Image 1 (cartoon, helix red, strand yellow):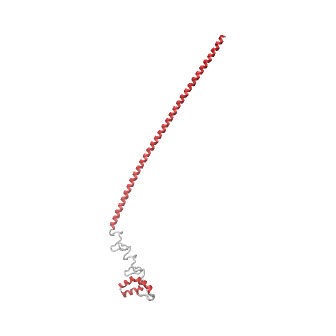
Image 2 (cartoon, helix red, strand yellow; image 1 turned 60 degrees about the vertical axis):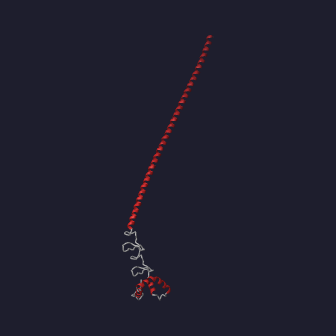
Length: 231
């Protein structure tokens, strides 16, 4: 921005004076070339002999305001971060639609050409994805139910086989117990029969021995009696 030199607070800006001398179009060209001219002037012109272009470059800064009321950068280009710039990220065009930095319509906003179609397509895609997800969930539930039924069937089959094995084991144990009892009874009968036979044999032998002894004793007594009678 122009600052009057000390002692001359009401002096007109150099840009205004040059505009009066060269005209608006010429001044626009000079303003566009001001950064280059100013840079060259710094290396070629003494500080006390500045040219009009050098004065313009000296007055040009990163916050200059152009003839259109828009702030300029140091290179003279429009600062597109300010409201009302020719092209900016948040520009609103005459059709009321927001523009991108390159001036194209932001087609993601409501009312942009094709935005409704894109929203419809997005909604259709969302419904399709939801339908596919629902179908996948149903298939997963169906597979889970089938797996549960198969698992229950396998468990029931395993339980039946285990019960059958238990019954077979019980039958085998009962048969073994019966066989052992039968064998024990047979052994007991055989032992009783043998004991009875032994008892009978012993009784017969004792009876025979007793009979023989009695007969022998009687014969001896008779012999003794005969001897006594003769004497």
